[in-house]
Every structure is written in C-alpha cells, then in structure tokens.
Length: 272
Picture (spheres, rainbow, N blue to C red):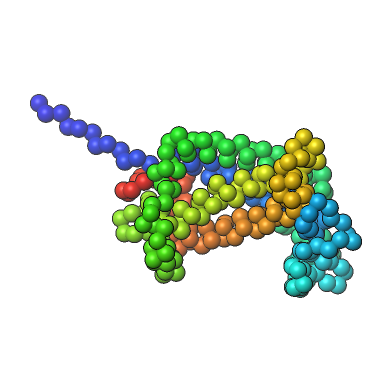
C-alpha cells in the first residue's frame, strides 16, 4: 500500500523573531519620538559643539510667543503658528511649548516624566536591536536577504529600480519576498547605521556617560553636536516611517500587515 506524503508547509515569509522585533520596535520608536519631543520642549534650540545656551547661536530653533510660532533653520524662518511654537490646547488656551500636547508623551509639559518614558523605552529598544542584529547574522538573514550583488550596484540597475518605484512597481512578478536594491539600501542604512547612531548619540548626551566614556562625546564633537545629530536622526526615522507607510499603502496594507502578524507563506525567493 502506497503511503501518501503530507505536503510540506511553505516556510514563513517573516520569522517570529522578525515579527516580534518589528512590532516592539514600532512601539518603542513611537514612544521615543513623542517623549523625545517632550525633552526637546525644555530647550527647543539646537547647537554644534560642546556648549549651548540662550545667548549662543542655534543652527535650528523653534520660536514661540503668545502671537507667533515659527521654526528657524539657519537664516530661514518658517511660520508655524497654530501647529508648532504657538497652538491651542483642548480648552482653547494658547500654549507656547515647541510641540503640542498631542505629539508628546506625556501630553502635558513634564521634563522629568518625559525622560522616564524615553530612557525606559530606549533600553527596550537597544536590547531588542542588539538581539535582532545578532540573530540576523546567525540565521543568515543579512547575508541572504540584504546582500547587495555587484550587478545591483550598477547605476543603470539603481536607476531602473527608482523608475519602477515611481511607477509603484515595488517587486518583480513572482518575487514578492525578494528585496530590491532600494529596500536593501534603506534597511541596511536604518538598521545598521541610523538606529545605532541614535543609540550612541543618545548615550553621548548623558552626563554619566560623558564622565565615564568622554571619548564617546568627543566622537560626536561635543554634547550639543550629539543632541543635534540625535534630532536629525529622529527626523530621518520619521521620514523613513512615512515612506514605509506609503509603500505599504500601495502594496496592499491589509495583506502586508496581516503577514507581519502571522508570518505569511513565502512565495519564492528569500524571507525576512
């Protein structure tokens, strides 16, 4: 009697570790950005170097008064009255913090509580990123899925991928699970460059770290430079999130989100 073989289940497109890190990371980044804006509200000015005070020149600043709100970058001033620097709270009262309550954690101004939220989730984020990076090296996710071949480095290949993205074609037919060159570059840049930069620039701002590891602060050119780099990094992460959400919207948000929850079956090619 011939035994019928049970069909093998296709491997998952997203491993459990990837899915857990994705959602924990999303929560951590949301809290870190919102609590970071609370901390920024305490002194909404950015400097280069070691020192920064109200009398020093700030390369970027949020200005606020009872009648005007603006963002200044260099000598360029953009009025933001009603949104940033000058806005109304739920009771209709004018507030002059840099960022409004709906964008911060907590929703009211408290530097101490903002720091508690920020540091607590920063540790979760840092440990999670460390485990994810180690796991990605051991399970060969980096070597297999993010390795950029010589052919992909060709300007013609990169330009073709840019044109495909502009036409909302993110994947080759039948190769949905394979990352294209722009995805590889963005994921490598964010995971292995931008996120570690955020962690180390955050550490460089800590007085305790400055006392024990002064070389880290020197590496960034001073605590105020580290603060500026930290804030620029946050802006780049927000930009990455917006692009990520737009790509998700065009690629099918329900299916893609559900696959990131349950794993999804691989349709050929590699998996994350």
